[in-house]
Image (cartoon, rainbow, N blue to C red; front, top):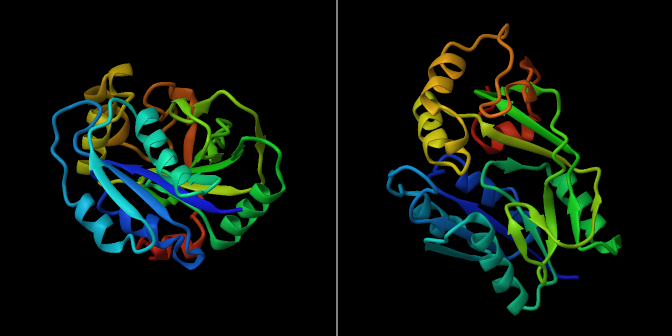
Amino acid sequence: MRVGIVTVAFNEPDFIVPCIKQFEGFGFPHIVLISKSPWRGNYSQDNTWVLARMHNAYGETFIDHWPDQATQINFGLEILQREGIEWALFVDVDEFYTSTDIGRLIGHIRNTNADAITCPNMFVYWKTPEYLLIPHQNDNPIIAIKTNQKFINKRDFIGTKTNSDVEMHHMSYVRTDEQMKKKIETFEHSHEFNTEQWYNDVWIPWTLDNVNLHPTIPTKFNRAIVHPAPMIIRKLINWDS
């Protein structure tokens, strides 16, 4: 059973290299897909592309403009399928796993009859890897999928799927103020909420006492608590203090 990786990114210079490096010991071919422009807003691409090209020793890196994230991911799946690779790990650039969990995920791939594998154990961090958002998310995102499948939108497809016991550590909200402002102005959900209001009223004045932090469904992130990510991941992303 051959396994590859597909990662999509736009303006993620802090995470692109750690994202690639977390899989280096496994030698999986890694398809990194860099958007030329954001889904929304008008920021230009930074040096994420250059860093990916420099460090992606086990795969290929592409920069292009795709109309949506499903098309972008499917582009990577098609490349792996043409190379005879049956399964792909789909890993956003700010998603991290311990090597133990990567090995556990490969075990699930080898033993499942489903078309995709999901992750019920997603830990989302806030501001720094020291603060964990609660309650834990129950989105069950797809983290591995057969390369002959196609996404119809981000992490949604027509096929069978099964849960895993893998833990994903998602650094989606681990950003400086400037980085977060850019993120919410350019990502695919920016039209669903008042980005300036959320940034000024929720993000900037945040303390441990604050509640209802999610930008589009406030109660989805009730609060952030002190609960650091595993040290091995904090070191990987250069945040081991």
